[in-house]
Amino acid sequence: MQGKTEASYALANLSNNEDNQAAIAEAGGIAPLVQVLADGTVESKKMAAAALWNMATENEDNQLEIAEAGGIAPLIQLLAHGMPDAKEQAAGAISHVVFQNVANQDAVAEAGALTPLIKLLVTGTPQGRERAAEALRNLAGFPINPVNQVAIAQAGGIAPLIKLARECGHTSAPGGKARALEALMFLAQNNPENRAAIHLAGSRT
Image (cartoon, rainbow, N blue to C red; front, side, top):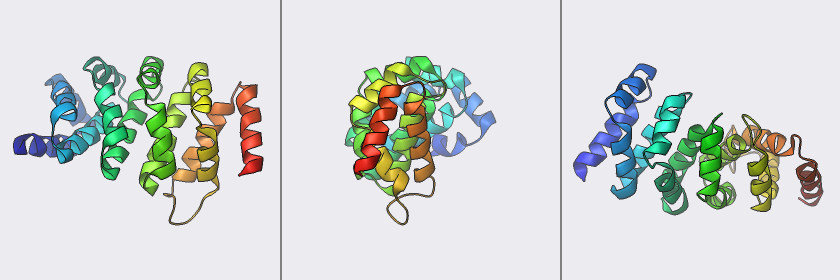
């Protein structure tokens, strides 16, 4: 297990570099990271999620490979049951796995990510809440995803997004307010029901 932890650390650090991301993927590094997510130690799971976050950033090929390797389910498990810093890494990975990728947006929502993302939005650390808002934004938009717009609203995502958008100070990370506002914008776009729900929730909070 110590070896897996050290390897996850190394890949998380190396994958910050775009050239290294390509090299890691070409060498077959994504599937082992997914395996660590499934059966690694607490620390190695967190670092595997961090590495997958980097690997998925603005890289459609890696987004698809992470999904095809079975990465969605263990990321959601870590998001739901991990330690606070691991939840943050899982939410960040999910956010980038679904960014501008409709197939992954649908797969992640159908796999049950919305409830733990909204819970993290309510109870997480400031950084975790920002990552949750970003993930909900990317699930609802880039491009607009009408099914996920409805699902996020029905799961109770609107009120906590409004709350985060109105917060300031130590309870929210610097980007949390912006990510929440962006998520609300995408939830409302071309969706009169969500616009009305946002207006109503905003008048109550």
